[in-house]
Image (cartoon, rainbow, N blue to C red; front, side, top):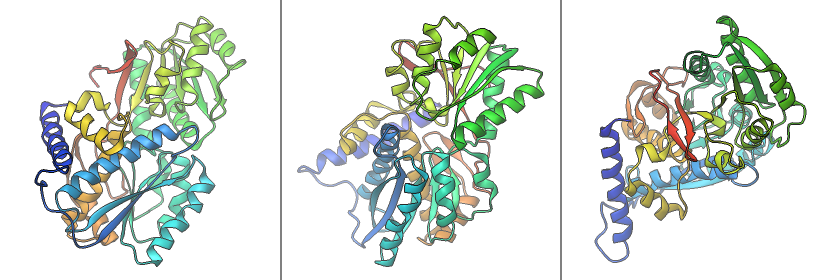
Amino acid sequence: MTRIYKLFTFSLLAGLLLSLLGGCGGAAAGSEPTRGEVVVYVGVPLTGYQANAGQTVLGGVRLAAAEANRSGGLDGYKIVVRGLDDESDDGVAVDNIKIIQDALDKGDKVLGVIGHLNSGQTIAAMEKYSTMPFVVITPTASEVSITQKGYKNFFRINANDNVQADTLTKFLTQKLNAKSVAVLYNDTAYGQGLAKEVKARLASQGVKVAVDLQVKEGQSTFPTEVPAVKNAAPDAIFYAGYEIETPYLRDALVTAGVKAPMVASDGAFLSVTIDESNGTAEGMYVSSFAPSPKSIASAAWFEAYQAVESRNPDTYSVNGYVAMTVLLDAARKANSQSWDKIADALRSNTFKTVIGDLRYQPTGDLVDAKIWMYQVVNNEFTQVDWGN
């Protein structure tokens, strides 16, 4: 990340922190919104096994909203953030849409939805979202087909799985020089889709897929999978799944004496992957849709986040923060709260964010989307500079 963006983050968030502290008695920075409220829903898991991931997205959204509200909100409207717990369940994600519809029926101004964390819930909800009067921006859902369905109101701030598969394949074959790869993946749309793309690219380069195994979402023991990997003796291991499986798979592989380097997908880019690995995460690689907060944020960013959330940020806090920043910036550029004008603004402008300039294709995918690679070093995610 360039020094420009670090400075941008510092100055922006130092101002927010000062205004938050000044609210106890000093003069407020900027004008308070007085024209009413606009609502942004955040559809992510807030309970259950992926609660931490969803809560970090929500925290990033809240921080961006707090910043905006300290500077007059959105055209004088206070931005209200409402979390919607999808429980990592497709059916719950769809059922929650009634809450949004009820708000619309009451006359609430719904600007957009930030969500969902997972591709499965995003796919399920978009069938209804696509007919509703707001923009949807996912912070992390990467399944390729979502942006191939012609939705006019859907956008991502992350790369899709085609881009991720390209990067992961290059990393496996160029950085790790793998000639044979064990490919494992969970049984979600995300895991299956990403593994399919990686396997196809490996095959096209003459790399042997030494093992091809699917595991269950949330699986924590691997009595048949680990021996299969060990017996295949691959040059590298790739896992497409979540933080709720990855640390346990890593622990089982290392405990069994498997020495091959392991690369996990973005779904594992959370501190719990390190914390739950029983000390075995050291050295493993993980892809990411955004830089770690520690690699781009100043101390002021962390303090401002803590002031809003009463907890530390985690990796997806950046994704939520950027998604909200882009949504609000598009509304300002459109000079409108109408979803179609905001969507047009998203497709026709460049958005400056803490992860770089973002531009959109007509489909809602990013132009020149990027994947970051990290390695666990001294029990922390450290960005890998490998010339990609």
